[in-house]
Length: 131
Image (tube, rainbow, N blue to C red; front, side, top):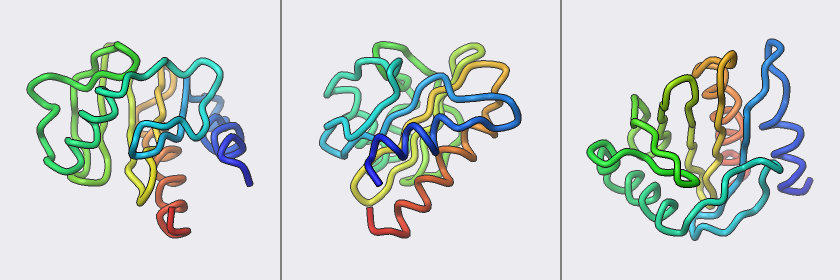
C-alpha cells in the first residue's frame, strides 16, 4: 500500500459524517511522504520544533505549535507520543511513529476526539508495523 493510500483511505476517511480538513504523513526529517491536496505548506523549522517537543515535552507550550504558518495553542497530549493543538474551531493532532509524523487537521463540526481517534489509530498501526 502506498503512503498516499494511507492518507486518502485512512486519514481522510469519513467518521460520523465528518472528515479531516487536511492530513499528511511526514518523515522525521521533514520530507513529505504523502499529503491531502489541501495540506498546508510546512516549513522545515516547524517540523524541527515539533520533533524537539517530542524529545523535550512541553517545549512548544510557551511559543505555540506552528504548522503551515498557522499558530495553534498546545493542549493536552501524550509526552513523546502525541501533540495536540487548537485554534478557534480548528485543531491539529500529531502522532509520532518510529519513522514518521501522522498529522491530522480538523475544523468544526469534526470534534477533537474524532481527529485524535483517526490520527492515533493509524499511528498505532504503523508503529506495530515498524514504521
